[in-house]
Amino acid sequence: MTLTAPQQLRYRLTYGGHSAGEQRLTLEPRREGMRLTLEASVEMPQPRTRQRWESELDKEGVPRRYRERVEGGGSRLMEVEFSKADGLVSVRQGREEFSIPYLAEMHDPLSLILAVGSLSLEVGQVKMFAMVGGRAYAERLSDQTRETPEGEQSLKVYRLRPGLSLLYFDPEGYPVRLTQKVGEHVFEAELEQIQEVDARQLRESKEAREPREPRPQGREPGPGGRERSRIVGRNSSRGEGSRPRVVSGEPPAERGQQNRQRPQPQPSQSAPAEPQGEGKEKTGESSSSRRRRRRRRYS
Image (cartoon, rainbow, N blue to C red; front, side, top):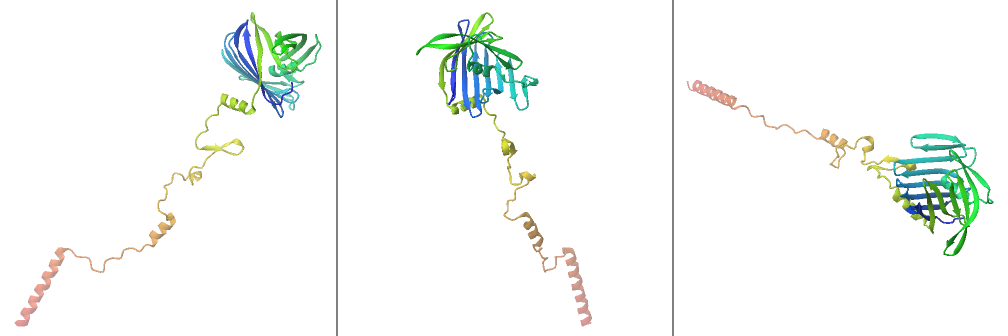
């Protein structure tokens, strides 16, 4: 199976012969390998669940990261990182975190499906795959056929253990049918449609599922994606944003200097008026002295 554009595989789910929901498997080729995304809405068996699995593969089809989220009847999240360089597989599930040695190529549930579809085994041969926390064995069974609008189609069939799941692949390597015994009935996923999807449409769909949180006001992206405070006022970075704004066009220093150089008002040239009582007394004293001088003159 060689992809040049993203493709989406739509499956119909049944449980015990009854409709049990729907499932989409998106295959997205990338420069460094491929990205697999499985989204399922499962109505049976109870409880109802919504599932999302994501796997990032390198060019050899070996996973580098895996993420699984299931909601319904409780919520659980598991994340796995496969590091060949460090020789470790890091697992985080809820509050539990642990690491195991990376001794051989390991697979997750999604990458395992494509790996089995690419096998070239004879009937009866078995291939072992290392998994996180265990191993999986794929056994080649006899081929089967199915009816399609184009006629009969030959299918390769593999049985997975443990779990006794059956995987059916068409000649191009697409998984067209998956069955597994769950409880007393068989859970089945049947391929209904394969369609190409636009890469931009995939990005928009992902953004719609995971909306961005609104950025707080007064902050803007900084170098390297980090946020930094936006300068609101001219002097806010120095703690001066709360100072009163100067209304006049004169700088404060010049205004103060002009106030110091402004001439003070000079006192009036006329003498201040004296109280009225003192003025009367002086007027009376000068008139009596004139009368005495007149009497001496005429005596």
